[in-house]
Image (tube, rainbow, N blue to C red; front, top):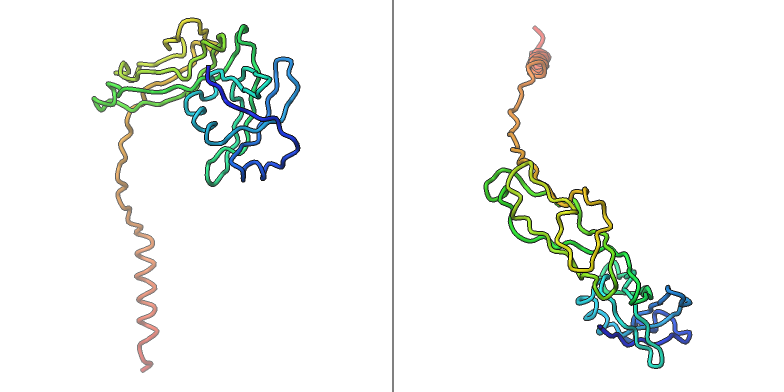
Length: 212
């Protein structure tokens, strides 16, 4: 299991922690009181790339270790760097329900043949499994989509052993939509506007003629 060193906070301000290269965080759940901690930013970013929000990790605080999932991650809106993390404590012997991201691969036959374009309806799916069996992501191959009637449902997903689908199996994950050709609009002549313009010019010309 992935291990992340953590330190219980002793009243440090969030800004002080961030300036020191650490991220303010908290863990809670499974009978644990909400506990404020901090984790090293560089190590956390590296771990998050590997674990995401579905892989169980161990928070190591020296004399105490807890198993947890990265439950919520806040980021700086400008730089995108993590500014706060919520860890959800879990029981490794009890199943957990999580939303697992979908990774699409392959080029649909319908797009190859110019029949239509793929519409990705879902980008994550709810599953249930023991924490150790939770997948980091679920891969969906789009290649079989060959016609406008072809659809990939949630029940069609290939789930790892020990993982149960929670999302409704009939929910559409991806489908094919027909290409829509953009027609060039033909300019329409406004004859009434032309007549008004002509009339206005004649009136101006008449007004400019010297009086006899």
